[in-house]
Amino acid sequence: DRFEGRDKEIAVLVDDEGVTVNIPRALLPDEVGAGEVVTITIARDAEATAQVAAEAEQLAAELKATDPGGDIAL
Image (tube, rainbow, N blue to C red; front, top):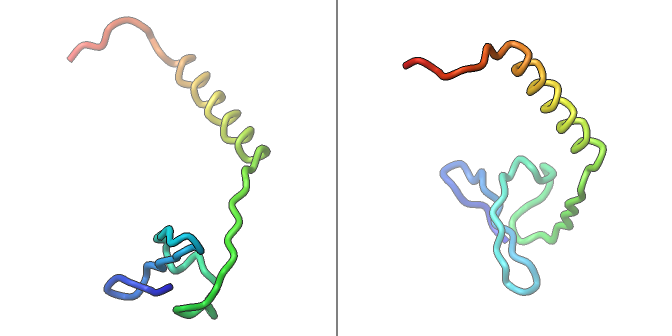
């Protein structure tokens, strides 16, 4: 629909039902202008999700290995 913000950095998208979504303009192709129709797809990335989970588990294990246990003295 339009661009807003001091530097026009926010893209205001309006769907066919009138639902408005604001996204950073940087996520759109450079050639997109105000009033143009765009198609946006959002998909789940199971592989990336599994990778992030594995990294979090590894970090938790590393932290647990160095934890002396007991209460924290303040």
